[in-house]
Length: 284
Image (tube, rainbow, N blue to C red; front, side, top):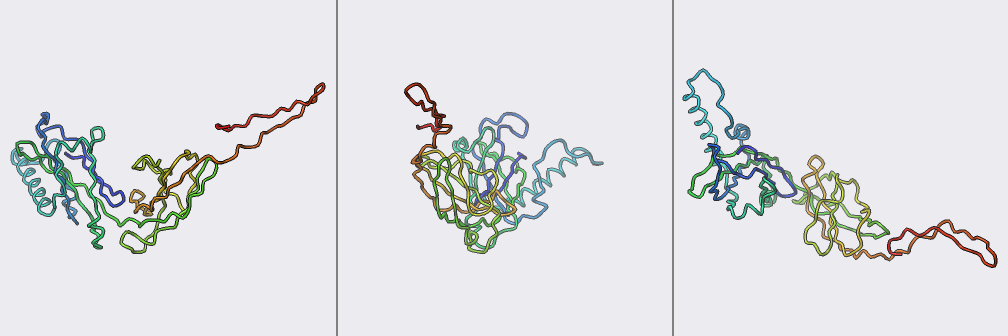
């Protein structure tokens, strides 16, 4: 496997890779048992650039068998070095993979809380995976994906939710520091909204981090809503900080309809006829 990738989202390293369905020989993999995820701290550049073998061996002046043996020996040495310096963070049984699969891609989130709270943030984290068959056979090590972890911002404080007709205005106070309490520069904020009946938030309301400390949620639906806000780092917008304490809002339609427009009085025999444009209020 050579398509493992990793990026940091908030306090998690998010790994994505294809569902393993083939043996090294190209035959279908029908007896997958589990997937082991390994993590190494501050791996060397040589290890980081190692990739899973793919395609034919490079052409050399050596006999094909000798070149293949040298390539295989180098790959084994790099694999053994990585496994020696790494720890297995999880072993995912095949029964659990369906819960982590999106299409043909598996997603695993590795919580970085213990590393971040330690205060000694590693320069790089390297991840690799190994698949196991039911008979115990192990696959070669995947490519090694690396990420430079950063300490996310702390939690903002929501100051007010101001409902208005067709919109809700949110104001907040910036975090006092990062997750370790140190001074932090904020690149922007993401605002989230969910109905009270749902447990999880969907995508943020704003596509790009908003500057400042306020946001207008245009078109918010009436009902019981919950809001939160998360700060981001200037150069890493995917590294969102801790969420603000949730702020509930019972958003009800208590707003009067707009005034009728173009009122006209038409004089007729024995009466005055009044004519006006209809009011475009859905609940009139």
